[in-house]
Length: 237
Image (tube, rainbow, N blue to C red):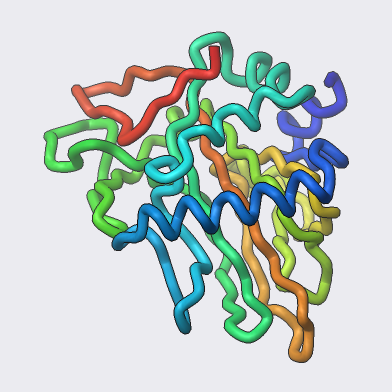
């Protein structure tokens, strides 16, 4: 646990290998598609009749919070976020081999909220994504959040892997390292700070590999300033 916490502190991310089995990932993938089919709407993303993403995964699968109780995830959450932590947003995405996509370098600065029309000194740039209200949050708030990315499939050089800039979560260019490309086996979990700068490349031409990710965002407290409320908050306790 000490090494994980040190990696999160210094680099802004830590890869946790072998948290879930390949069989568990196959079961999870099948269950999620079934749940999303049953909760189809603007937050469920489809292409050519197939689901490849969801911007509001917790509406269909609030039970995903249970996956955060798997050791050592529960202890990691407690040590980084405290006793009042909760799950505040879930995303699902696939990078199908025949419909690949990429993302440029960015940080995850937005949070999902109930209402983004409130006057606030802490939140800015209100937007709506797939019908869900979002705000851009302060760096102080984002520094007290943690994302877990569960890899349903292996992440390799073939299927558009994630790249990160270690240390970029500190918001100080002098503490950043050179970008690195990550890899993961199915069942690995990537813990990362939202302010970690990251990007994703296109899958290689000719690959048959998908890259499915369950992306879960956790916050330290159910309470937000200025009367703003999380769109979801499912406590871990």
